[in-house]
Amino acid sequence: VFHSTMRDGFCIHIGQYLRGRKKADSLKQMEENDFDTIDFFIYMALHMIAALGSVCTIGYGCFSNKYFHVSMLAGSTVLAVVRGAKRYTYYSTKMHSRTLRKQFAHIIADANGKGEYFRMT
Image (tube, rainbow, N blue to C red; front, side, top):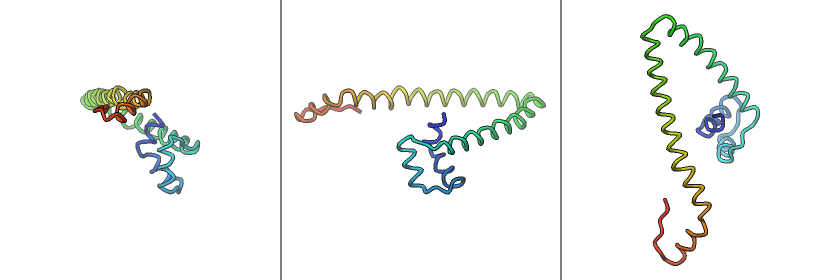
């Protein structure tokens, strides 16, 4: 989860606002998927603050109002389904197609070199 979140642009925010790092350096880290240990600890500290804050705010709301509780359950279910569908789509299309292209690169190159029509998207 840490690497996925950092690659989605959170690395730029941590670098810019909390570390004073240049945006180009953060983009390089995102591209190489190589993050600092300090970035990890900042991420975990923010995660802890958010988790404890949500226990106090959302937990109290769920305890005091059953309609709020039901809406939080419904919202959590919808969020889990949407994120699961996105992750499944990523694994079933982008990640595996990238792996297949690497494995069959020589076949693709041969087919394209002979002037044959070969499309692998």
